[in-house]
Length: 316
Length: 232
Image 1 (cartoon, rainbow over the protein chains, first blue to last red):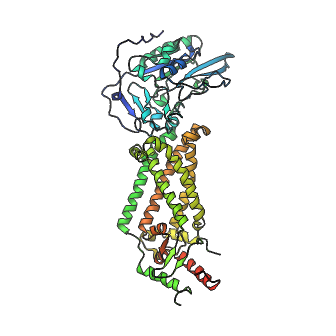
Image 2: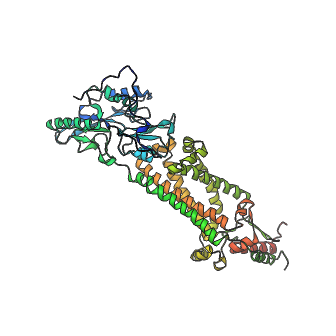
Image 3: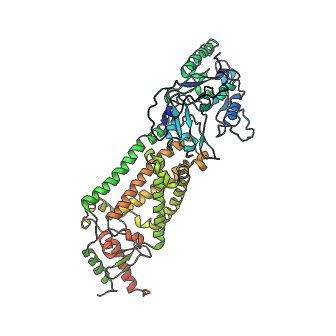
């Protein structure tokens, strides 16, 4: 068992990180922070999850969101997808294991993975709408968000959602406001089976090791940690009993990475585009300086007069 | 039967100088609505394209409003340009002399128009601008609808939206490039801008740059003169 985070004290606690700890800020640059915070991580042990949705409940309670009462869609997911008011969602899949012929109920808590290389931040055109702290948290700053939805296209996990109420993007904050004062995420706090634990990234990896050894000893030979290197690792990690087939867990991507289309759009296109336009304008200016304007001459006017006069209306 | 590039309202008026009607009031209003939308689109689009240009969103009252208004201006541009397309497509059909004109493009750039063939209402450069604009606007409106988050995000996959984003950005850069050509040419070739403001050019301008068109207009006029009496 991983020691749970103690309850908060009743006295004021100074925030442990702030704007000074930003390592990335969308569509802008930030000075390198003076100190490197210890990287934090949330570890979701899928094998321990009982699908109770306490995490979802804790999430909407802490974030004070009010998901609309929906309709029964015939599945356990409720709501059926992530929404601007539902930052985390239990996704249920039924899988018949061909090796054991047994039905396995694979439940995965979906939500922002807090990538070390965040596609949302890379795609974002609004300065400061998406920020990344040196402890690994990727957060949306709503007053800077313009609601364009580029973050959704940048995200390899299809996580952000745009609110139709205030036209800004929402996703899991990793409870940055709680973590800043020494608390853990609300979902981790509420989880009754310790399927969700929170700590430093190193602690979480270590804890995962123990869990994976345990799962392997119970016959899950392919148990492993999901910390995909394609996005530089994540600050939300999974322990999967079938780590060789992450797609089984409601389509968890095998090798997530920022789409090359997004990389091209935010990389070469951006720089080459402005260069091309600058050169085009420059060529125009140069041409005018060298060749000068193309002016109509007196001669041209006379030719035109001759031509029109010869048409039977003027002097013949 | 009028030539392919002569519109019903285009007329020569003899005098000193000769005046040639080139664009109707309708065509000019249509053109300037299109021009204004294209410029506003470029400014708001560039604000979302490169962080160093995000300040341009201030012209539209901030990022949120820029994001909101850009696609709507795009819709306006699409319909406005469609009007121009209907007006001008015929005069922009590719003709044999256009190939020769292009082959002697060096002379055009060097202001030696005496060495290039006589052309109709539009030369090959103008025709290039017209067709490039037409194609790029179709590409931009279709990719733009795909990435119009507020209303259309539910109809396409994320993969399609990513393609659309890249296509939209590349096409936008291209159309701004075409616009630079269009804008510069209008300044470089003096006497062009009045055509889109007052609607007419001087006979000398038509003689120098669009002699075939001028000849056609003169021929039409004399035919009218020799046939039924013109209302004068």
